[in-house]
Image 1 (cartoon, helix red, strand yellow):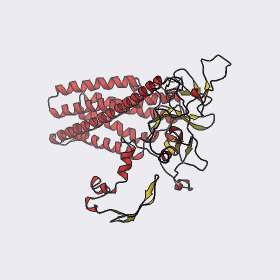
Image 2 (cartoon, helix red, strand yellow):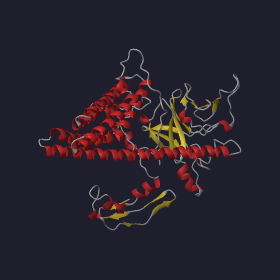
Image 3 (tube, one colour):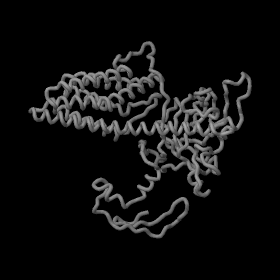
Image 4 (cartoon, one colour):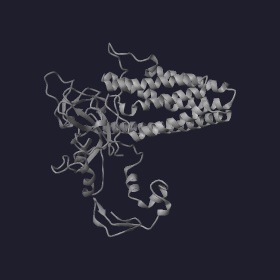
Amino acid sequence: TLVPTMRTPASPLATLPSGSTPASPLATTPAASTSALLLSAALVAAASRSATWPPAAVRLGLATLTLADIRPTASRQLSDAEAALAASREMAVERWARLVRGKVLGELLGLAIAVRAPCSGASLVLLSHLGFWGLGAANARVDAAAEPAPLPPPLAKVIATADAVVLSFAALGVLGPTSGLRAAGSVLFAVAAAAVSAEAVKKAAVARRGASTLRTGAVATAQDGARRTAAPQMTATTSTTVQTEADAAATKIWAEQWWPLGFAAHTSRAAPVAVTLLGAPLVVWWDDSAGAWRCTLDRCSHRLAPLSEGRVTSDGCIECPYHGWAFDGQGQCVRVPQQEEGSAPCRSRRAAVLALPIMEAQGVIWVWGGGLFESAAVTPPEESGPALVDVLERPGVEHSDYSRDLHMDWSTLCENVMDPAHLPFTHHKTISRRSKAAPISFGALENFSHTGFTAVRQTAGGPGR
């Protein structure tokens, strides 16, 4: 997939400096996680003693929702907020931490109330969510490295709307004018909680499979390196980089391109970031001394440890977390702590790591992929440049950036978007209608080559290309 997989190294629990306001004991990651677990158990026990089934359904639904979604989300947000506070005490970071802590405290209070009054407690849990979004959490969000990580407004709106709908069910279970309506509200809440829990479990399973795939790939990489009789040539293509048996012309189409890795505003400048591009593990970091992004293979030339798990030094180099070897933005090994003091850094080609040309344009980080392929240009031509959007260069033009993770192979996506015949059926009542299905004719192919082709397409809506 061309969508990068970002990974931020884990940070220790934040230690508040003197003079700062301590958080509530419950609003720390271990305490909140344990409290949510205990309250879930209390809800299940209370459900087993419920005299009627609607309150039992609400308690069980809320317990399931807590274990599948509320508890993991709260733990992740608190952990990131604590790490961000350890990295920075800026007002924006402290505001995000306060919002997260307030939401978590509201959730825990709601869960405690739900043990005795299920729909009332569930309503308070969801009110804490709506208050969280209403106070601007989507724009205030920061990551563990204290870098801004705002949530796309459409996504935040969807989440808040879903919370409001589920809240209406819980409120009906409390405020319904008749016992029948209150029972209906309880049932609707329980069903909605079960649906959200199932979706959360599904997403967690997908994430675990992705993590397992990355770990398997790392092990295979290490085993492949161990089987080599000579040290890997890090300036040449190796078994973990992209390989192709296509003809040279087709290879150049893939290799000699500027590839987008991610948005600069969403990429940490405080720590290395791991990115997977076309199957190749890369690491990107910000060289503050040069004011530029750097990119190399995410693999130390010494023992193949992931450089993304290391750190960026004050002179803009990336330091391996295993033995401390340091590499500059050109991939050269500039520091080996185990060498005697005063000796020159190891300048052997075998000690270097593959560095890729990298640049930032229109807020996107781009990397030249030639070094990942055999027989391809390692450096871009002078006239070469990324695929920019001309209109963004006009004065007064504003835009917003967002990204999506698509759990599919790139070829599946390309095949889908080039297939106009599926629109009336797959997207019936959204962007098309079954009644719009019609013959599609193409004219003669023009400019046909390994780079693509042009053809006139005739549909009921008129000609297009």
